[in-house]
Length: 137
Image (cartoon, rainbow, N blue to C red; front, side, top):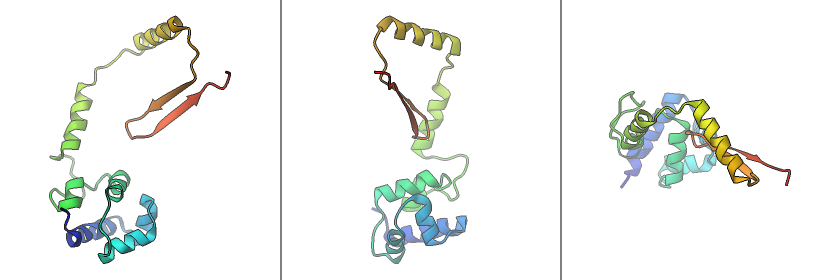
């Protein structure tokens, strides 16, 4: 369980580190200013969504440090966090695919299917995506 008072202290360290006011911090992570005020005053506890927004916007903030004070802030290059270790392993395991072969194989499989493409979605590692729709149908 997260100790609310200690969480507030760590959240204040984040604000100081980045030189942000509570309202500027709220704007940067996309939450209402009142929610930051309620957290800092001890009225409310942080939600999972709130914590995830901080981690997404401020990569130097480590999850375990923010929640229970274990680890360091700002984040170090080497970390013992499981999520960081998984990302490092994924990067090491990814085989290099020759672009020409991959494109040729893709084009061959598409033309062999003879089905119209309605949309293509490209997902990026940072969680964003792009969607392309075929409006000719």
